[in-house]
Length: 109
Image 1 (cartoon, rainbow, N blue to C red):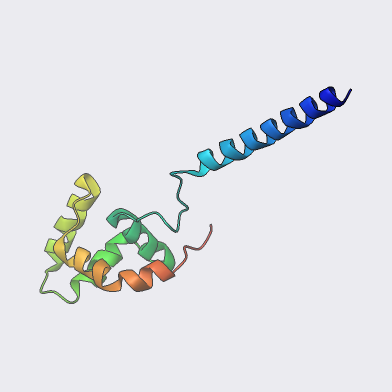
Image 2 (spheres, rainbow, N blue to C red):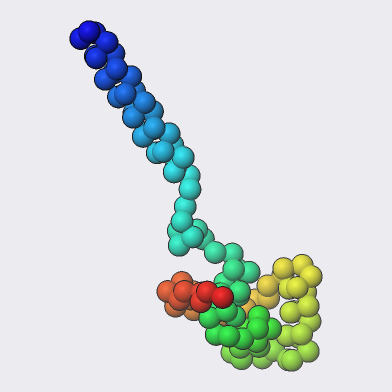
């Protein structure tokens, strides 16, 4: 009788330990959205959503600190839409404001 009770306790402990190990192994390698490094496209999307403007408007705002013509902005934005190529002035804008952008949260729909 005692041996059956001890066997039951051991079996229960094994099941619990297996469940704990499985849960921990499932979490390894997973990162939360806040820990994940954002891509340039993610930053542009985030800026556009938070400000309520389009990604094209973000390109225009980024170009204000540079001697960039409206035609060049339009060409660069078209290239961004087709090939995800981000021009230097947009990279610079995001890099300079990255700390502030990371602190913002995207509003829900």
